[in-house]
Figure 1 (cartoon, rainbow over the protein chains, first blue to last red):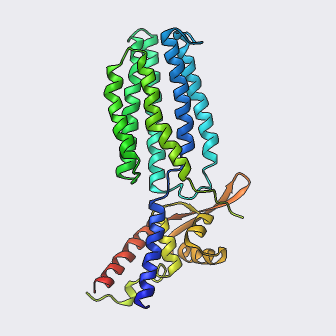
Figure 2: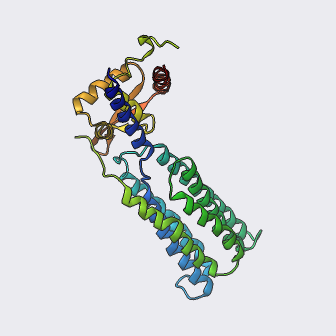
Figure 3: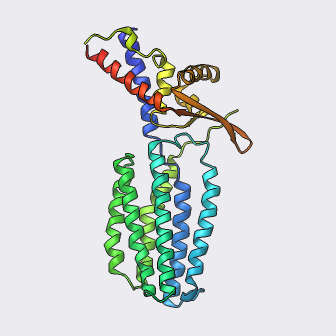
Length: 208
Length: 97
């Protein structure tokens, strides 16, 4: 084997290893769907708090339940369109999948426990506002891990904005403006990055 | 250090099989068309080389259906990962000679 053919083989395997490492994040459409749904729900919550919306504040739990159900069904449907995309099992995509599953479970359990505790009169309903700093903390952690381990460059800025939103959303606890801040935060840390992920997605490949 | 030709894993040591192992080391499982596109191999050629790697226990092929479409997923096994790491170490030693 000549040196030039050896070099050619090494370049070839290097390009394949890099193709796997650099496979783009594929869950953009799912993230975008959840983010848009969250913004709509947060806005309804804001209107309810200010007494200007179609839903009274004592019915807002139903709106959030609808958010969870619609989001879960839409996730299942949208994830089917990803099965034939190359790079679905790359380290970055497996990380993203595991982190978001963990985030969703934690937020769901926290919100459910907070809602039940408040309904039983153990704590004030103001506890529901603490879901937002928790969510931004989880967004920051997810972005940081995807940046550090997965090499997702956009995760750096995304993580920095998300972590900044933790003290901001704690400062505005009890103020309806908190919900508008959360919408702006989701737009910056989720909607824009997920649109970018979608533009980088490769086409589907199927067996003939 | 002297590296005898026997140290080189012949099952991996082929351009296309090297490519398959390199890609699967970062994306596992990968679908058959995904591997075909990334390696640039023909259907028949890829099948042949996957069979060799599977026979050695380095990869595992799972044939099934996604909806009504057939789908073959190719996994790098633990044995395959060990063999890949060992292969890269041998290659590094050869290059350092």
